[in-house]
Length: 240
Length: 330
Image 1 (spheres, one colour):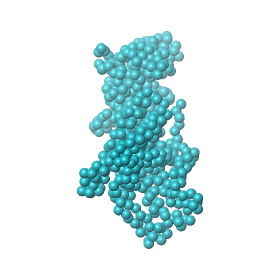
Image 2: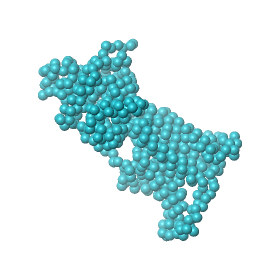
Image 3: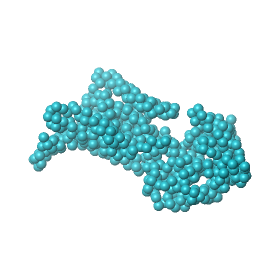
Image 4: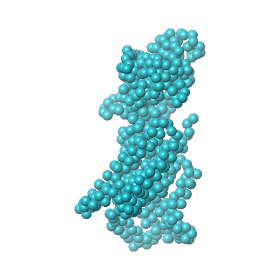
């Protein structure tokens, strides 16, 4: 049965499990090209699992995931990445004993042309000039904010069609969070399609076109950013 | 007593270095696999042994076809070591596919993989023994002598406090070939794209897969390289020491593992250093234990000496000389 979708990415009724425990129950969502969509919810609601199901780190038991017209729910993670879905994982997950340069190079692992890699690196430096000063430093020795920049830069080295960010604000000072969100917004304005997972609902809804609210593995609300921001339930649960 | 020890020093250095570089290359096989899978692959010593036997098989085949007399020895040696290295490399990849990958897929506890590796170790030993006995009626195989020209270093006339030292031309061969292997591996790991992928997989397997890296392929490449180096070292061992049997991999493997722990398991340069260190210390012990203890302990205690080092390292610096203390993530 060939699945069809009119959206750039469509997640249809997926159930995902961690060994015996069900983490997602019939999750439905979609993203259109050029959109920035946020998925908000509290700790353990299933935000990360949703991202991991899309990127292939978790294999959904039921349901389907269609990206650019292709069913990808059974793909291994590196195959999904080759299609152009980049994930900036929760907690940044920089390679601590690789240098900043190597961390960026590894983002472009599938690219053979050295000029293309250099070009992409320059683009990353446009967003994050600080990384250029730290090229030969080991990733693990940088501050949290710098690591987040490196994690995003590393994902950009793939030149992804869809960029998924998992809690980019986690553990960072408010001023750094501000910077990171500005850059996310900027990348989106330049055409990048973005799926943003956040606990920081206020900031996420501010820059998002649309949003979904996830609770104990189920999508309970969806709407555009302003609507959700005004919604009583959302205000009580996530913006108070 | 000190005069005695100094007299023997040149010979100790030559013999210790020969043994040490062998340990170093085998230790790399342990440390690479540990770095990437956190698995102590106890079968690795037997992969080394299988390499020695594969080298012997190729050597006897070449001899049977008359090439041994017709071709220059160095050419024969290159043919033998390359074929044996490729064959053991593939053996390593096969072992990983058949024995370890299925366990990984099922998320089996690491202890299961460890026990499996001990099982593979026995399988290899008995398989090689079976084939060797079938072919030659004896599982102890003596290789045709090669590179056995003897040299004497006339140190005594110039430096009277040293004795003369002797070595075979195979000593130079072992030293040169292992050093080439060690440098090539170091360059591969630190300077190439696949080496970088290997380091990335060792540091964070899940995230590496998000970077379009096929983790299983990197693991296969790791096993190929580690096993090929081990097999090539088996060939060197056969040429240097002449006689091989299916059990040479056991004690040598444990010692190479000791060397890897000594240098900090997971650390490739540490394993190289640990191997050379251990070889030198062991030969020093073999040569001097009976002098130091006034005959109470002889050279046969050198193995005890090696393992005392392991125990001391584990007590006082469990992360090894070059390892970093691992903080358990909560």
